[in-house]
Length: 215
Image (cartoon, rainbow, N blue to C red; front, side, top):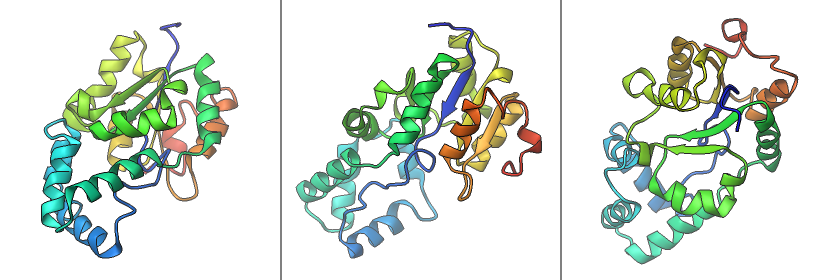
């Protein structure tokens, strides 16, 4: 691998995929779960994403709180992890860009992503590297984006040459502050839009501040 190639960082949730864990739960159970774990206090979920809990521990806690047998909840959870939908077109475009970029999937996620989703979708076939916050122990926003510097140092490239595609406004701002070029996915600017531009020989590079999609 040519370590002097710039890095193209790509987010997963909200960027490549819009499916959710536990999406197949009965509506009443799903609503209660959302209130408990994705409401005002997301500490428990964020700690899971930093590797402090396993998927089994999380589902055991949820099963008690929403009054559902662990085995039933676990089967739904694993099935939903394995059947998350990612556009094949996006994966193929990312793969095609690997001749010009080191393409890294960088996701704030859980052990279940690596254990079930990544393997089921064969994501390792489309990326040079997959970074999961569960195993990194940090989120993309921690310490002003130190995880991005970790990878630019690893591959010996300048972050000024690197690109991020992400749906998080906060993550994009941090990446831009570090000197990279960040593009935020929104409703009318999906990942396909940006990947098409990138195939046009770096049409987007260096234009962060002028792009109408960047906040």
